[in-house]
Figure 1: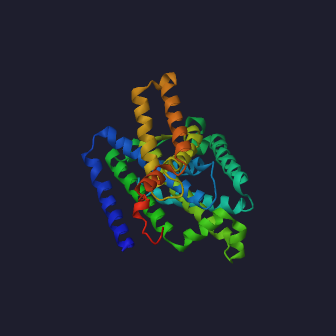
Figure 2: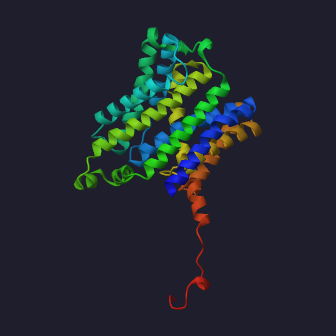
Figure 3: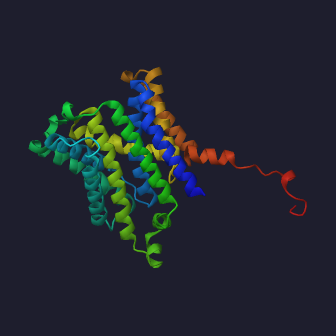
Length: 319
């Protein structure tokens, strides 16, 4: 019954994603595209965190997807939707290689390794200007770029597909192995489970999804350079959204992405970013939210929905 209801919600969300951008103002459509990319990278980061793999280099997957889409589009004039496929394959392959190479690293050491990898990719992009354009970056030809409504609809569909993947993953046997790995990989090995296989699998899946976010950004903005493609802010946003929404949950990255983007727009509207006041208020609210809501907005909502048991509700025999 739950699976049927889940499919109904997913199909309904896909219909809304395809239709809604055609009836929205351009500014709100652009905001939805930004929201979709944030959901993609936040949900992919949350998948790895659910297995105890804290990534500080998710911008590496983002940049790989962005550069692969831009270069393939300019070289072969492939359409927007088709450029998603090679970007996902590249992100999955790079994620699998990263998980395999760092197989013996845990915790902080794994996180530092991912950060170093992302920075190494940025340096490589700068050092091969004949391929990536170097510091000048790469422009996507305007002749092959679709209209913004099409890109918004497609990005929303990708976000829905990502949330659906997280949903079905959370209800599979695969999820139990990931949770066990988060607690102790040694204990998982004693149960006869090979943690390396699950480690490679979840990192490859996370890399493929995060690469899609980079593809959307490259096509939507029409330009990509090493600084923006491998920006540490991407990884920070990917971490803040699940933490603010609800870590290790399916809806947490979605709720957190909506909350932090809305909060960013409100602080930009009511405060002056150029003076730094808006950024200060934005950062203070995020820090306060994470400290006061350790389980995120989703956890706060679940706690408020739990019935409060009073003495009057306890039977006399139980007393």
